[in-house]
Image (cartoon, rainbow, N blue to C red; front, side, top):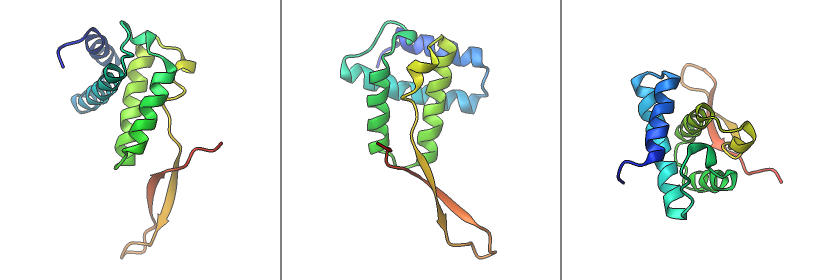
Length: 125
């Protein structure tokens, strides 16, 4: 994918947020996955603020269906949300950037400590 205007805008937002290099990399990777999805769907707007909430919902649905690591999915959604908030998107526009998560209790470890694992919860309808 060649350098896009949206990627440049996203990188500018990441710089303004002031994250460390690790978080900046995570946020940029998350952003690029969203941008690839938008390009595949033919919904690539000229500005970050113009991203459609329905397109974000479709992106989250696809990411959730392909999810292997819930923690990574959550981190990616947070990164995208931070970029879009910094760009000036309305909070209402970002509502689809969420998933329902539940914690499942696992057996105690060998030292008797409680353990949990996060899983995606089915959407409540």
